[in-house]
Image 1 (cartoon, rainbow, N blue to C red):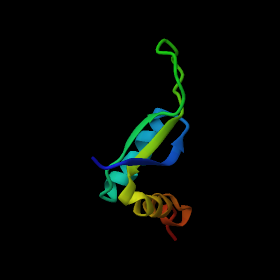
Image 2: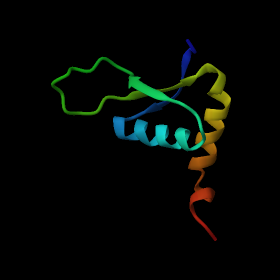
Image 3: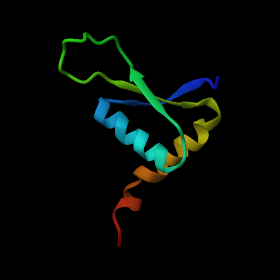
Length: 76
């Protein structure tokens, strides 16, 4: 089994899903899990750890940086 390592911390489940979508677009598998214990009856999102296979850490970091740079979003 491939070891999963944390590459980012998301403030919420929605943010973690956005990062997971970016990674998926770059061909990188990922998953997320709660970063803190969260009471199941609370309605507030808990921070999430974004995890990728250990062999994909560098590529995942580069993909997140490349796909979230403001210059890449705003055209001339």
